[in-house]
Image (cartoon, rainbow, N blue to C red; front, side, top):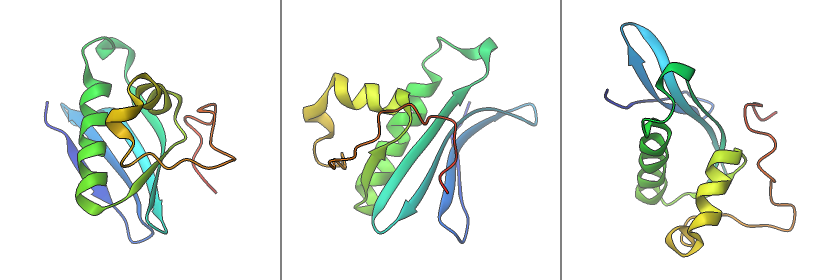
Length: 110
């Protein structure tokens, strides 16, 4: 399963995996002012537990570093990954006084 990438003119994008013509996993984000807001990660139930979300996460981290973006972890999965190993992501973790709690996962930004 290869990870694909798309981003539109409004800088909303996704890392995703298609299988047999159906999207089975995604990590959705929006970029604004140099901040990549990673707001949703999803894997279809039949594929859970296979490390697919982790592969999408790793690809997002690689992309953010390559582009020089800071990452706002609005998705609970991404926030948990950052919190588990904060030193590994200190260079890209966008922190602020009103840092997301991760409870917004699955809700597109306005």
